Length: 259
Image (cartoon, rainbow, N blue to C red; front, side, top):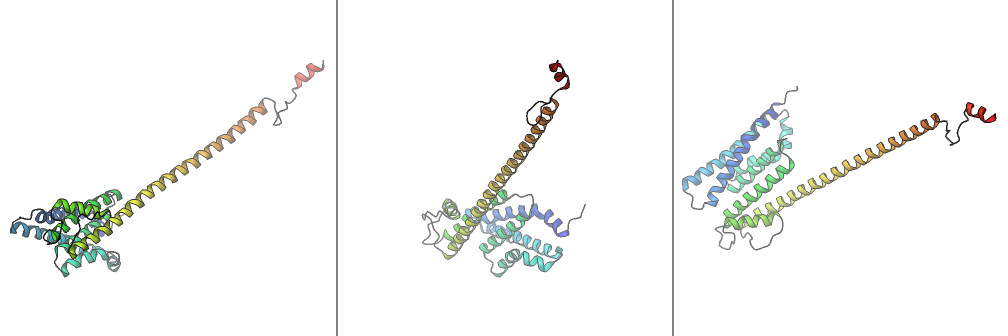
């Protein structure tokens, strides 16, 4: 059995721990937003957890880079991972940590061969819906002209934005909130395209299977037809009937009739 490269073994072993850290990041990000009256110590703890999770994904990228056989090729093909690692270091904003961690989680989730496309898309929809709601609530709740004040308003707004329906009853008023809206709209369109392409591929594969089955049945019928023709010819020859349908004379019968 061929041994896997060190990078592949590392990615396989760290897949579940990193996903567990992503769940911890989600909880740490959500608690201070949902509970606006959280104590300073709890908020600080959640912030430290967020940075620790981001640091874990950054360390994972550096380890994979060190284990890669061709490091330049790795950097070229994983430039989104590099951006997700570098961006929060330029400006320590919670939203940047959120975006970068979501990017890193998504990139690592796509590497898992056991994760099917439908599972990945479903998880992406739920994750974007949840984090979009929390992000817009955190920036719009204290806005003087804002109308997204509760978590229910934020979830409803995120759902209508991701599906590109946009009823207009709730809308962000701050610049950062509108940036979140643009990200959700683009993500919703992309996910809708993935779902549509997946459904189209399923239908095409079904039609191809039906076409192959139809050709197989047609070939089987033709083979049976040829076999029946051969059997009829053989039966006809054994019974003394030629291919033209005229019976061959039987010697004993001809002699009896001549007498």
